[in-house]
Length: 253
Image (cartoon, rainbow, N blue to C red; front, side):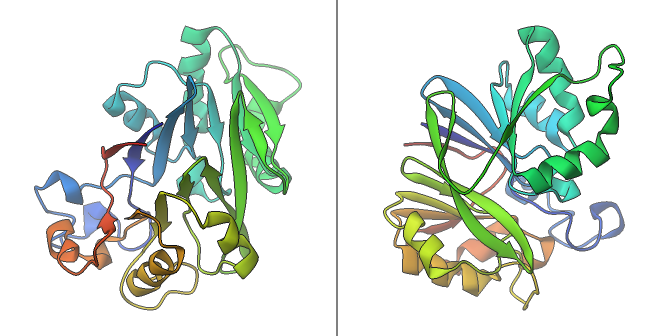
């Protein structure tokens, strides 16, 4: 299995263009974070988890030539806004894109991209095969995804476990039963927005506490706000086995 971090940042906070802080103006590539997404290559399949506003550039930057599916965690714009750009894969692969989402997220996609789902199909619009995610594990081709139910304040969000890899973003609380589904993962990815308290995201310390509770061989923090600080500085504060993810980071399991 190969994991590529397409983006590790967030829309949370001041827009980069208006900010001027040391993170947003840093020349170091570790501090240049696009909206959070990850690419999973496993058992012959290439699968994106979420397609935010930066999706097109992320695909180009990562050199993705083929994409089998997009799996959605939830319906916020920073996770769905790039769905229209699957049309390039439709064209080159000459087939519809498999999209996996809960019924609630499907409803949001139908509102945001109404023209994709209209009865009259305008030439060139994205072609999708929609699949429903429920409470039970599901297959993307031969690849089993186990949904992990988390709460983003009061909004249900899905994390996913794929073999020994678990990916969770936009979480604030996880029930003990869902934590049990994560245990045994070799690699855990979890959101860590900032150090200050936040109503809907794990803070830096909360994410580290969860990482230590799970006990994965390696935990990577993602969905990072500029408020957390520069990559090099924050890395000095992390315990053994926990690292900050960054755009372009590539892992092999």
